[in-house]
Length: 376
Ligand code: NAD
Image (cartoon, rainbow, N blue to C red):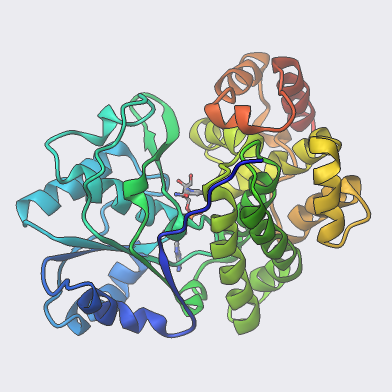
């Protein structure tokens, strides 16, 4: 087996470390021209302004004009601001949506292009980019350590990741206290994304030993701490452990890439508005059962390594976790028509599906969506 490992992001983890943004920028020689891409709540409650003030002039602009699952037009707006103000670096403080928007804007701003030219078109991103400091505020995507930016083109009805080495932030500052304000349902959904990333990173065709170790570390933390973080938003231990799981699951998947559940999540989010992590979790136990005997027993080994008797027991536990934290286990309320199910099958045929260890046919997808359509 041949494998490579590379992880270019410096990680600073711990409560209160958001206050180190200005030191990190200074250590990188960034003393002016910073753009803070800020999560809405922090733009509204004064946190973003305080960070700008504390930066001693290093950060001069705030951008928070974007939506969850950011649109290509919103990236173009942020890039236009960077060009107009001749900005030199980007601090991305928010969930995956803020970080992914910032990553794409930091690259595209150095061109006169629209990001739409690179989104789902196969055109390689330019390698030049402004330096990025990523500060996640959800325990979810792991985007702070990945080379991925997931964007949506609402005009074309398309959601897809763009991958570029230029998307790796220079530094990730992970401060669990920033996640205390995440509402319970968002905590549940983003936490399910962590579990999906760990499990899919492990069984991806591109798996490799260092990422396997990360997946085995991250997944049990989600089973143990997600229900606590949902029930007790200020529980310091649960928030810290979910942030640890999130960044380590990010490392688990960024090189192997995600697989079937992520492929299916794109139309579930795009067409039916199901939040990203909830959409991933919806199909995770189904694919676990399909993949259980793949890779000469590796998936069974994973289930045992994280404390289950076998993959079926792990799949049962995923289902129970969804029920416990209030996430969907079916799509019955959507009253899906045959045509809508056919669309889900067709659009799930995303490149990530081909990373799945078992070949997924349209018949399998049809069975799965029919089952989900009939389930509460
Ligand atoms: P998000 O960034 O869309 O945030 C979800 C909601 O939570 C939003 O309404 C946001 O305003 C709010 N929020 C975020 N932080 C908050 C806080 N601290 N307090 C209160 N509210 C807060 O959600 P996410 O799950 O972090 O990111 C999802 C996006 O990331 C999707 O587009 C997904 O496809 C993408 N993604 C990217 C990667 C990657 O490697 N780049 C990996 C997985 C998913």
